[in-house]
Amino acid sequence: MTKSSSPFTPPNWVPAVEPGMKILIVGASGGLGSSLTDMLLKGSDCIVGTHGATKAYHGDSDSRTIPLQATLNSEDDCLNLVDMFSEQANGIDGIVILAGRLTKTDHWDNLSAEEWEQDIHVNLNIPFYLARTAMRKMKEQNLGGRIILNGTESAIHGGSAQSFPYAIAKRGTECMVEGLAREGASHGILVNGVRLGYIKSGFHQRWLKKDKEAMDIRTELVPLKRGGEPEEAAALFTYLLSGWSTFITGQMFALTGGDWL
Image (cartoon, rainbow, N blue to C red; front, side, top):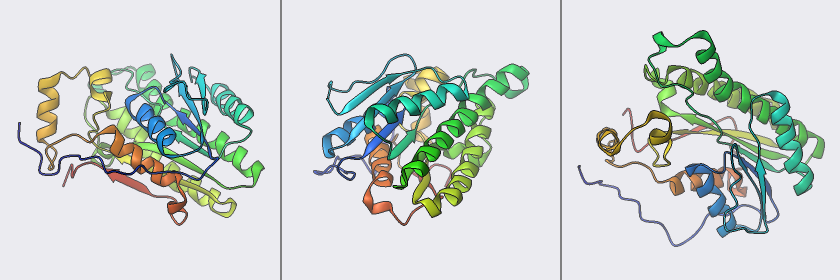
C-alpha cells in the first residue's frame, strides 16, 4: 500500500467549545460519535448527551455526560430523545446528528420498496425529526444554537449501486442544511453539515462488511493515500460547535482526503 504524503500527526492542542454548552450527540456510540465525545470532554467544560441505539456511550463515566439509550424509529422517538436530554441538561445548545446506517447492501435494482423506504427513513426522515425538534427547543430558549448534520461526499457523485438510497438520503441532507439554516438564522441557530469521505470509523466494516484487503483498495483511491482519522472529523465538528464558527451557516464541509478530485 502506498505511503501517505500527509500522515495524521495529532497537534498538541484540543479544540474547545464555550464553557457550559449542552450538546446532544446522536450516535455517540459509533466511531465518530465516541471520538467527538472524548474530544469535547478533554478540551471543554461542557455537558454531553451520549446517545446510542443499543447502548449509550459513557466515555470514562465522566459526570459531565448524560447517557441516553433509544432506538429511533419514529418522530415520537426523536421528540422523546431531545426532550430527555433537554430536561436532564436543563436546555440544549447544540445537536450533532450522526445516527444512520445501511439497512441492506445490495444493488438498488434488487431492493424491495420496503427496503428502499427504510433506508430513506433512517437516513433522512429521522435526522429531520431530530433537527426540527432541536430547533423548536432552541427557538423557545431564545439563546441561539447549533445543529450539525452528517453527510457523505459520495452523495454528490451519484453514490454507489450498493448504497444508492443512503446516498440519495444524504443528498437530501444537503438541502435540509440549507433550508434549516435559512429558518434558524434570525434566531441565532446555525445549521451546518460535514460531508465525509473515507473515515476510519468502522462504518465500512460494520455496514458494508469490508475486510482489510477491501479497505486497502479503498485507501488507494484517496489522493492522500490514507483514510481520515475519526479525531480529524471530531475536530471539525467541534469547530462548528465553537465560538469560531458564528459567521457560518447553511454550509457542507468536505473532509475527504481529496476523494473525487
